[in-house]
Length: 331
Image 1 (cartoon, one colour):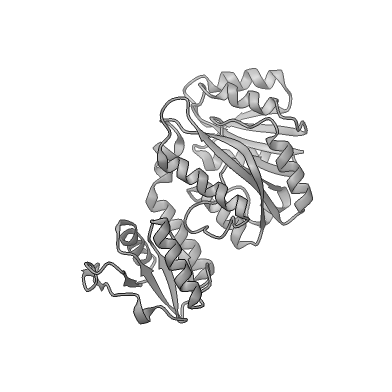
Image 2: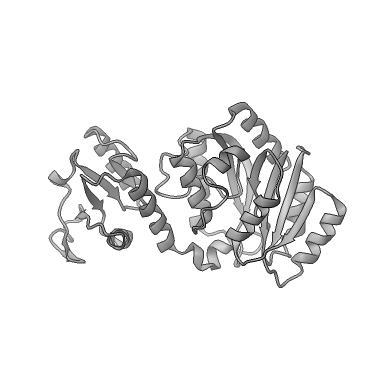
């Protein structure tokens, strides 16, 4: 059985369509554990109605407040051998669970299965940033390089994965108490050695709307993403005997430098922008990459332009630097 964990907070306008998309699944062996997270609209009444309609749907109230305790409570009440997360404002294609289940059975334990996503909106024009992010996720699924750029963005959409419960338990459960909880979970999949298996078709319809949590909640601000990346780098990838070098002195490079300082690391700092070379920022003089990039360095690239990133990647690979060991792309 597949256990679907779903926090619900003030999504009444989209919740019936979401629940109908679950009920319409071609794969039938599922349970839905919905946690009402102090909704002030009629989400609770909608959950009650659907729970009366189908015994596979159960709902509970969140004792605390927020997505993390809601997910933890949902997992506690779930019983399935496999675990999946769903967002209450999104939609499942009719064969989503069937495809995920089939792929996970084929892949076996020690795997996490995911698939392509499609952003949509019925309320506003889609922002290009969301479109680009969805395309980036889908590109890595098609290329079978899901974890290759994990330090750039979260490479698995939060409502688009399936894994065995025992594997979820092994990596520390549905959350580690850290926001952004979806990115933290995927980092734990990565560092604990789960093998990602992709489905090269759309298995999730991801809704964008003005009150979407990633737009409105303080738990999803940029600095928390940078903190999470730095924390996982320092815990699992950092070589204390080597020097950390940040490459890039734009807005994100500056944010990243401050994040490392926050964790007690003072990196070297390089840029290929000749107008910035020699400048002192946060007490550190910017220099050209030159001789700083050798085997006793770990390079953190903070450059957003995809073309520039690809050029740096090619050049560093020629010098023998290994991705996610010697060189890391953080944005």
